[in-house]
Image (tube, rainbow, N blue to C red):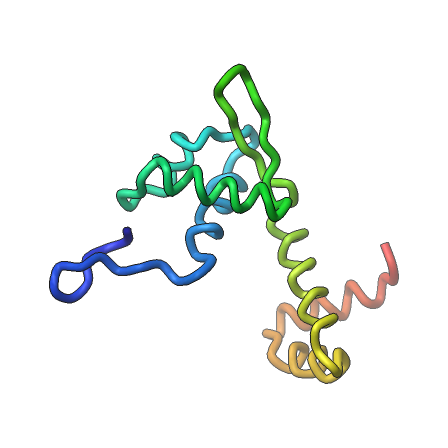
Length: 127
């Protein structure tokens, strides 16, 4: 696991952190990666079986695609980072009882640069 904690124990990653690290490794390249390549990319002393388990979970969630070449499988992301983040934002809006209030709070927390970009996107209309 990542780093040493108090009393010589290793610190545990937060839920979803390892999945995010695997996706980040996959987004950093144009080609599919094997579990061993992802293990090297992430580092931190992760066991091969741990990486393989995370890939299986991501595959089951539809977040990665598996390409088989003989017995060896390689994985690539099903969506890019922007698509996945936008989907998470839509999902969050759909879960709440008042999506307009959520949008209002979200927009008031934007940086000036983000606000400017949002205004430009809205001015252009639907793509």
